[in-house]
Length: 307
Length: 269
Image (cartoon, rainbow over all chains, first blue to last red; front, side, top):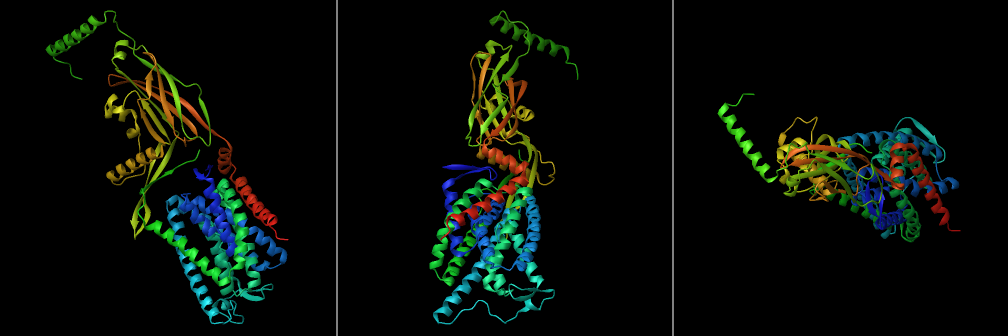
C-alpha cells in the first residue's frame, strides 16, 4: 500500500512509514528523548531527500515533546526563567541555522553537511554516553553510590561574567553558557531536525549544574517552542515540511511512545543509557558508511523551479 | 552563386526531364501538386490527472494534406510526434571523492530544458532522416539542446554532464521514446500514441509534429496541452508553495494536537 508524499515527491509504503514512526516513538518513549535524531537518519536511509527528512523531523519532535512539556508545566517542574533564556537564544540559533541550510542547499552541499553533522554528533554523543554508562554500571557492581550532580563543586563555567540568579534552579550562573547552548541547539534543530534533548539534558546537568528535577521540564519547554518555530520557517522559506509524511509518523509515534514508556520503566537507568548509546552509534556508523561507499551514480539532477 | 556552365546545365536539365517523364509514364495524371501539410488535434487541450497517476498513453490524431498516394504506399512519408514538458533551468551536479568522502564538487546548469519529453514516430528516428537534420530541428532525446550558459570549462566535461543528464532522465521515465507508435489509419489520417510518464510535470506542454518526405524535413506543427494535477496531494503542494506560512502553521497545530491527544487518550488514571 503506497501513499504519495507531495513535498518529498515520492511514493512510499505506508506500512514502512508507520513502522518507522512506531519504532522511533517506542524508543523515544523508552529513553525519554524526542526522537528527531533517529527519525531523520531513518528517513534518509529510506531515500527521503535529506532536506525534507530534516524539516519533517523537527515537526515530529513538536508532537513527541508537547505532552511531556505540558505535564512538567502543570507540575511546575521547570525553570521558566532559564527556559525562556534558552528559548530566546534557541530561536536566534534556529533562524541562523535556516540561513545556513538555504546557503548549503544552493551550493549542493546540504545533503553532505547533514550526513557529516549526524556522523560527528552521533559518534561523539554515543561514545561519551557509552563510556559514562559503562562506568556507572561498573561502579554499581562495586556497590558505590552514583550521583550525577556533584553539588557544591564549581567548574570554569561558573567563573564566567554576566551572572544571573535562577531562583527555581537555585543557581547563580553566567548567561553566556546558557545562551551558547540554546543557540547551538537552535542551529542543530534547523540543520539536523533534532530537538536536542539528548544533548541539552547532559549539558544542563554537567555544565550548568541545574538540579535534575527541573532539567527535563526546562529542556522540553525549550524544545517544543524551538521545533515549532523551526517547522514554521522551514515550511515558509524552504518548503521542506511534508505534512503527509509527518502525519503518519506522528500518529504511529505517539502510539509507539506509550509502549516505550512502559518498557523503559522496567529497565535500569544506566542500562537504558548504554542501550541508547549503542543505538546512537549504530545510526552514526550507518551514515558514515554511506558517505564513503561509491554512489550508484555520481551525477544528480536538481530541478530548478517548481510548478 | 556561380552560374553552371551551359553543357552541364543542359545535362542536368535533361536528367530532370527524363526523371519526370519516367514518373509521368507511371502516373499519367500527375501534375504540379501543392506542398504537403500536417495537422494534429487532441480531444482536449487540458489533461487533469490525479496524484496517484501511474502513467498513461496519450493518443493524438493527425492528417496529412496533399499527400502523394504513391509515395505514401511505398512508405516515403515519416512523422515524428513529441510532447515537450515545461522548460526550466536544470542543474546537474557531479560527486568526487575528497578525503574518502563523496562530495558534490562540480555543477552545471542547462538553460530551459524540458522537464519531460515523450516521443513517438513512424520508424526509429535515425532511419527517418540524418543526424544533422534531427540536431537542427532539436528532435529526439539525443538532440534536445542542453546549453550550459555559465560554463567555460572543459568541453569533455560538458559532454559527460549532458550524457549523465539524458541517462538519468531516461531512467526516471521523464524522457521516453516509443518508436513505431504512429500508425496510418488511412493514407492521410494517422494516430500517434505518446506515453505520459507517471510524474508528468504540471504546466503547459507542447505537442510537436514533424513531417518528413523521403528523409527531407517538410514542415512542423505544434499544439499546446495543459497538464493539471488534481487531488488532495496537489492542493497540499500548492498550499506548501503558495500559502507556505499557513501551511507551516497548520503543520505545527497538527503536531501539537496529535502530541497532546496522544497523552490524553493513553493517560493512566
